[in-house]
Image 1 (tube, one colour):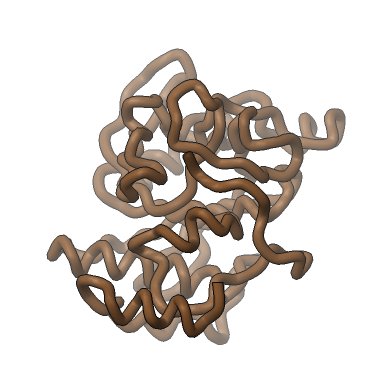
Image 2 (cartoon, rainbow, N blue to C red):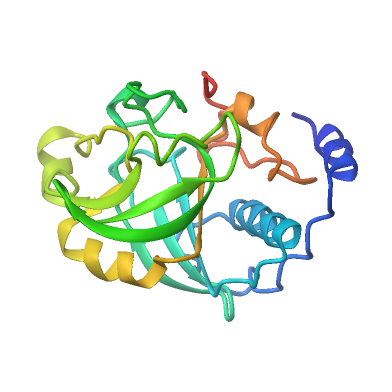
Length: 231
């Protein structure tokens, strides 16, 4: 989508995005592209403004344009722009092998969903200590709770697994992290912080109410958007 088209959609939206905080420049973002952080911050601020919600200190960003063998989850402290965590994270079986190229909101797809999520309560289930996620984008990720899309730890998320198999293991659509970091990460972001999941997917970029007037960043290789769209 051209920047002008996105600008037109943003102008027609219900509320203008709040100005992103001036935290992006002159910071070590540990590989998080500044333009992707700007997109995530704009999405978060648009949601907060629309719902008159106090701004949470933490924002989690996942970049599924990167391969699973690369750390592609960042936990950002929005008060000072620091990266608190930079982690490996798995995608769903239905989304592809090492690179996630398909995304879905459909139960049984075993695919990851894109967009903006709200973190909710924790529980202990078959994957241990887990964090429920509420998808905030109708038709894109709003079935997350019904699909049991949660953040949890998994033994197939580790550098050792990636070295042996050439990719991380894959979940049933959940963003799964390394077992040893799952509990502390969940306790940091539980109960009302925001999680932004990105891939250069045209179906999502052209329909998301949280993607505002800014040019969407391409994949890290400059190849542009991925094929496929949420269903």
